[in-house]
Image 1 (cartoon, one colour):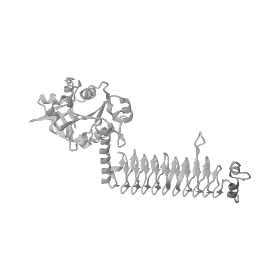
Image 2 (image 1 turned 30 degrees about the vertical axis):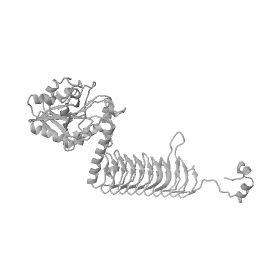
Image 3 (image 1 turned 60 degrees about the vertical axis):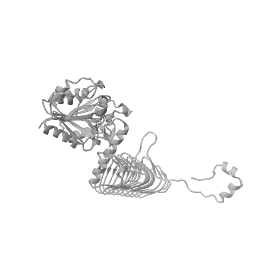
Image 4 (image 1 turned 180 degrees about the vertical axis):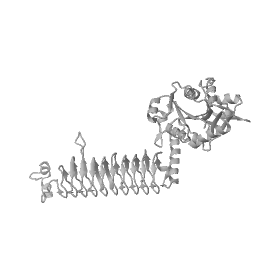
Length: 470
């Protein structure tokens, strides 16, 4: 099998992005745009990937990790100059094919790259160029063809008015014979309007020498979309969201409103799950089967099992077992684990806590740094007071415990299995199993209080409540 090497050109400054983040690291569907290109190359089975990096390349290396050969283009002298930086690496290949692709074309498909490489091999061309026909070719290099096929590629600033009218454009993706490529790179000069080393001059050299140069026209020109600004980034995002949503729907997922549903590339979803409008699934989130998610729900890096219902909620790095109901308006923070058939209701926040099977936290509650057993019922307005201003402390609530509404559980504290806490209590001591704890002021009624206030409101409003036993 012939060696197939890929060079990814990702050294551009990306000034039109107007960002402190390197252009290659701007994300689409949850991963950097450059990672999309690399993924496509891996799926197309290229044996080695060489990254040509430049501005803030160290950040790009750190984000992408290992597994690539990295070279640097420290001066921005054109695409030909960028490829020249990879020449020392290409020297180790006596023969084979080298695919060159731009790192800012994240919509390119692996099937397209494989098709280009296969046509290149089958036709025994020395150069094969991926092209596209677009309605507005402004800014792109034009494909100039004659009776024998492609003659040259003319850049926008070097093109005549007649050439600018041509709609078939160069996508910036090529396949070269490595041996021929090395010889052509030595001939490149910056003799053009930009004063740069054009990679497209290699096509001209081969045509002039009578060598075979092929083209492959894209079926979908949006694969060639290059990202230079935030508008194009949003266009590419839309393309990726559509692809992902359609794939999930074809695999048995119901998405009520695909245009208003956002799913990252690494998300997994089980069959017969329904996504309502406004759902955002990010990171490595996984959903089981027969779930109903949404509307207006965001899940990030969370694991959700089967038959879970989540609405109007934000779930971040949490685990939710089968049969749970969450929301509306719940916030599950990192470290939250819900066992089977747990109910977490409206305006509930849970952080770094385990909630046992069948337990209920229906509404208006904060649970943090806690372990709840099975069948626990937490009344409305309950707060685990886990922070003393310096340290976080745990709360333990045993199986079947009942916590009355508007209770404050001052940690560290243990509430025994089957214990009861009266509503409105501020509990500071451990409660034994099956005990009743009431920790609140005693009620005292003052008869005819409104009459006293009406007689002398100023006097009564100024005086303190005397003789009130707490």
